[in-house]
Amino acid sequence: MEKIYNIGFLRLIFTIIVITFHTLLHKNTLYGVYPHVYAHAHAATARGYIAVEMFFIIAGFFLFFSAQKNIDFKDFALNKLVRLWCVPAFAIFCIWILSLFHWTTYHKYANILHLFMLKNTGMTLCLADNGTAWFVSVLFWVSLFYCYLIKNFKRKYVNLTIALITFFSFILLINGNAGHFNQHYKMVNSFFNIGMLRGLAEMGLGYFIALFYENYKPGVESKITFVLISALEIYLFGFIINNLLFRNINFTNDMIFIIFMSILFILFLLKKGILSKLTDNEFFYKLGTYTFSMYVMQEVVFRILYKNYCQCSGFIIAHPISALILYVIITCLVGIITYYIVEKPTAKIKRLLRSWGGGIPLMGNSIRLNERNMKND
Image 1 (cartoon, rainbow, N blue to C red):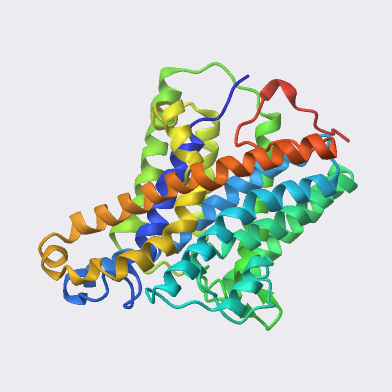
Image 2 (cartoon, rainbow, N blue to C red):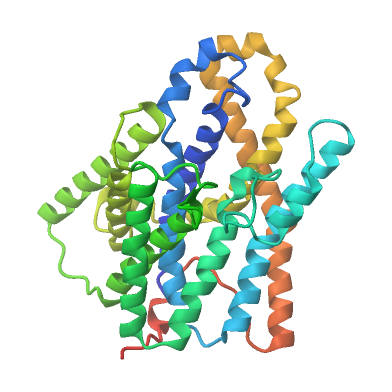
């Protein structure tokens, strides 16, 4: 039973990119207090928001397989809700606790909308108190929508429908937001939410990558193939990291990153190059399991550290890189702790629901290649 371990590596890297982006981009964040130190960093990480697209692509890939399992739609929806709701709810709870000690602000009515998974649906007008977790509601509703299609219609009709949705979602994104995929909370023509369009487009793209992977038959590898694919992996990975973390080139269309991310993801699935082979181990897979909590809890860590960390002007000005690395490490550690106190117990809840409901399976991030029961009509 083969597992795709190296996706954990991709999740970890892109989570770190997003954390860095949220830390450095805006003037009112942790390091923006000292713009003379972080002026270059503000500009260099300006496109870090694109890292979220990789999460949607990966989610669409796994949705293709998980939605085909022998469970009904109601069980799938409940399982997805339990999986995605608990950690964001815990983050909001932590922010509420902090507000009691006057460490931060708390907006209870806006947070109620967030807890009902209404962010980025067009039904809210603000980011509430955990704006960085906006993608959770998008992931939830798009997963349910695509799952319903997969479970209730023949594959040829599902493929056509998702292809059209993917294509026109990208068109609306590109033409409705000047070629960029940022500003997820805004609406296109007062009807389409940008964040929701990102989810529809990229999860649809992940769906078709899964369709390709399902029918892929590995051939005989040669040394030349290994060298060429290794070179391509390194180039794509270097291009993405360089342009999302270290420099700000004014690309007129963010679609170039979607294309490169998709190709890199496919290469990691095929595991024919040096980078995909080296990262295909349980260590990176385990780290990847923590990334959801790392991502969601970054807002809580920021609010805690902003109260004290920014007062250490001497350390931040003298050691800007070390300060940033320390912040990222603290965020990752908090995410790991959250995983064990929230996500692990959540898994037990899902097992309990399965025993009561007779069929809610645990949805992991691995694919059992010898247990696929795909519909081929």
